[in-house]
Length: 285
Image (cartoon, rainbow, N blue to C red; front, top):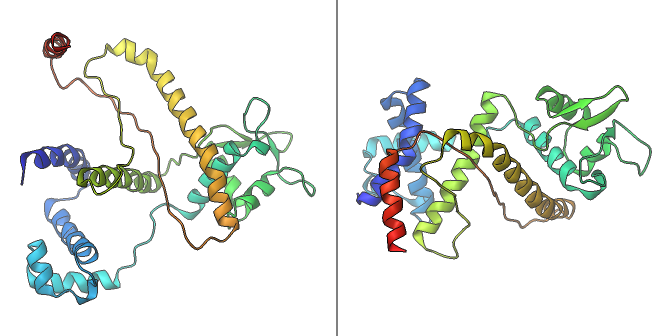
């Protein structure tokens, strides 16, 4: 294994392993889980016909014993993998995305309008919004979910008001599902760029090693606001394209994910070392 890849893997795996230990995942449990992933990925991406690959060829490719290969392939054929995000959570997120991106549902200041639960033909309502998003679930079920997580409320005037511009579930199961979706696609994007097979995907970050805690505390809300505005702008651009494809019952399509994340921690270097490196870079300039 080359040192660059090993260093990169350490950065990826350390926080994951730390979390797994806290969740009670011992090494043998993880190792057995990884075996099935090795077999699945090898036969899916390294053979023209997954079923035609022999146990011996998979064993040679993965380093897993042929006896285990046979068992794991049988388990994979019987396995039924379903998306981790609850169906009502996914539909609720879609309704909120449509609410904050469709011009008809925004006021003059581009804020989401308060909506009556139901209304006459042609008039805006929460029920109409749900129907337009093709959410195959009763409006009251989606509304209950939005109210439960504090994203929406029903006022005394019987109008539904959006309290936050994004659906964020508080359930551990949903958080884990988002973890797999977001981090998984981020990793796919970065690895695609490493292979250099085609036009690179967007994969950028801003990083600073040394910031005074009080200064970071002051600027953090502004960073979050700018990130939220960026995501809303992207949503307004892309949501109509998604809606059009759904209405046309398009049989062809591609999926996309564009995300924002934020992380902060103690500086990994001593302040004097950061200053020394900064001074060295300035001299080169």
